[in-house]
Length: 284
Image (tube, rainbow, N blue to C red; front, side):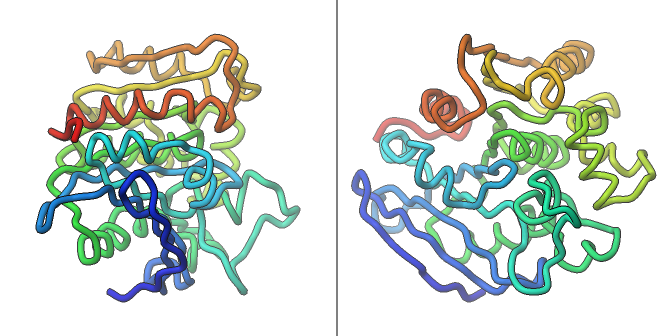
């Protein structure tokens, strides 16, 4: 699978690259970033996937996430895809709202027209992009983990719950844990998947746990000053589901922190160390 390098910069002895390629899943060009730390010739490194939130592209975490020092020390490849298809002919929300359409793919494969043609972010993130990473980077695909923020936290949780044999760890910042019960998710899942709420459950972390999906453990950080906490995020629903299913959950309520990358960057290294311990990586 071919791709084009958009940029490459040396950072902490490794290379921060940005790449684009023609996606068969979305029918558009897609852009993503990959940080590869310095590694011995022939060595393959574990991979951490990071899924971004509403309105974001690959660039938000790449520029503001402050992950490279920790990835260099721990020997982790860090992959950040875009959040939706983009380009001419890609449909958007009729009112150009920020929470649906461009920048808001919600990591599902849409079944409803006109979104079903391009909005296939589930297939892109779980199938097409991993194949591209495996073929072009020194990635040990037997050691993968996944994390995300907000809408991306929703994506990370649901992908890990549905692929427990692939991902050795999952964590999230301020995730949408029960999209079927909050306004952001109700709008997106209805728009992409239709009105049959039974189809939504495969893209709802709390519902997946209720329906029997399991992971060895979860790490979630949530700011108490997050403006979306009570209406959209509702971590108490994930806590209750994990308690009922006996899934170990570390839920850190961070006093005074908001929804921004100031919050994410503060605790990014903690999450990466947590992932490294489960991926068999360590200080280099």
